[in-house]
Length: 203
Length: 252
Image 1 (cartoon, each protein chain N blue to C red):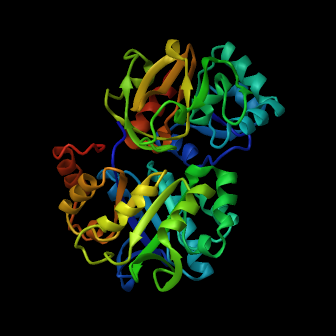
Image 2 (spheres, chains in turn purple, blue):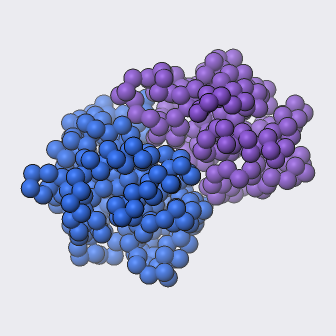
Image 3 (tube, each protein chain N blue to C red):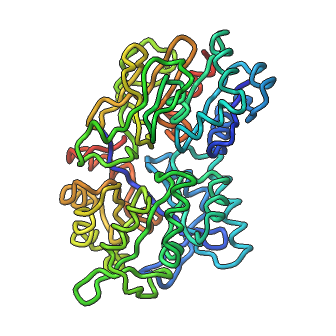
């Protein structure tokens, strides 16, 4: 069973539906017991990093996720959920993340010229840097996925699985052992996205 | 590289898809759920649903349909029509919408853009602008294109961006429904001041109109159309293959 972490951030309707679509049992929960019992965990998120990180901490879920990651449970952070896995973010100030992926989260605007509009919205092609990653076993180099973000995961070369070109090579997917993150939204990336979620469910 | 998006728009009234010509003379086209699935399977990059219902019953029917679409189709969904308050945002986001487009509601109360962007993020707020040439300027029209607000479209878009709109849909009333091509002149003027993605709407009648759009205005991020897709005059698959041949980057 897949557990989607509910910590009061964002809209989980599509994410929940997408697991139904690939015939995976899914629960949306903030209950520590349910998260412990789940086979794998999805950490979603939209909105601001500071706010989301604070909510994870206050609810005690941050510590629980770090513990479960350490025990080897597969965890997939999506969009802001991926960014929360990093050590730090510089979105409106400086905030600590979960520290499960080495690196920090920085504004795209600092790195690219004004012709690149912010947010980075739309379908962009994946350049797969780790072709052996189990997350990509059903998809191909150049497949397009849907991005919506203004900040990106920086200094995470050791964890990179895939990038997408947007003035810079944006970290599109990362992993550290059993901990995975995608900057793009697999639940909004059509057939390619469903294949990525299916692959995650087989890890 | 980011791809240019092709976006079919579904105007929904009382649970059915309709499309007006110059906003008048609505004709019933098809089931929104069937049409949405068809488009998603055939390469649409995103779907826009405009709720043009006026009644509370129609509105409830609309959110039911939205929920059903969002549980079976996994591409971005934008919802517009009747969005006047942050509660309206909440209502459609809970049914699986990813972005919400504001038009008349934001003209009446510009703070809506600000409030929604703060609560849901800039990426969630799409400013949809119906514009028409009046005395040598582009005026913003409200109420489905029926009422001249006197607002200058360029100034309104600048203000919308400052307040947190994450995307602009520019619909030219002058070219809408005429099928003679997008309003390149008006779009060009908007692209000059746009800092967020611009979606072109109004006037597409053939595949060539899309190649013309993206070649003439590289800053346009997406093309939106309704009737030519609904009536099968243009197939999205064929359109994207042609764009690809013309070296315009699309998701195939």
